[in-house]
Image 1 (tube, helix red, strand yellow):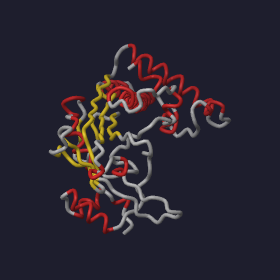
Image 2 (cartoon, one colour):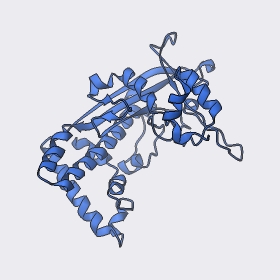
Image 3 (tube, helix red, strand yellow):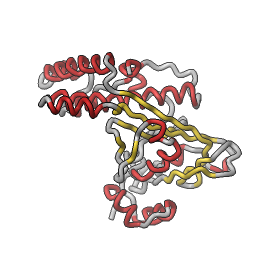
Image 4 (tube, helix red, strand yellow):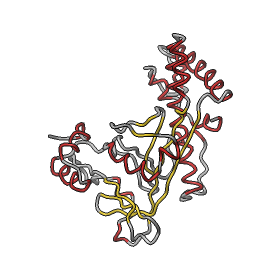
Length: 288
């Protein structure tokens, strides 16, 4: 857990407390600076105790597989012969009107097409720093200490993101090794100045939470990291993060935006799910 401290992005921590401003500049803000500094000091004191006394446990599982894209799908193969499919991730493509010849992006664009002959790969991860957290939140709540109950939850969330950041660094430099010579300091890492992305199902580029099911099956996430999916595809324990790894040098984060009924129907067919179910999961992204 101590290793993760330098990977913590503190700016979202303050946002969770409805304090607007970027870390560390927020401390000089005339409106919220003093409150932010007190909160930060309290958070660091509690974090010291959490780490020293091992209040919570961190676990992570990662996976790398041979993969190629077929249109808007990404096929995952059992081995490098690429003859047998282990599973398929289904992606969606931007449809909203663009100008200036801008491409309509899909995450599948960042994996080499099957007919290109390029042997590409694909990765996934699931991490948690929520193991043991409930014991401490329950203790604080029993003591009517709502402040520290909320504070430790916020810290656990930040540590989960820090663990995701650390594992992504190791993917780039060690396990996948596509950026072995990367030499970035903590600030540059938090600014995402590295090659590759790690989008998560449910977020702007891939808003369909149901894609987590295959990811968890491939990773054996429950058995390996103690993370389970609820019926609504939320992760348990809380303070868990999962996502996909892409190494393409031009890969970037983007928002899917609004999509039409034509793509929804085609997507439902690819996933072998009924249209109404897909519409439920993609409701915020529908243009109809």
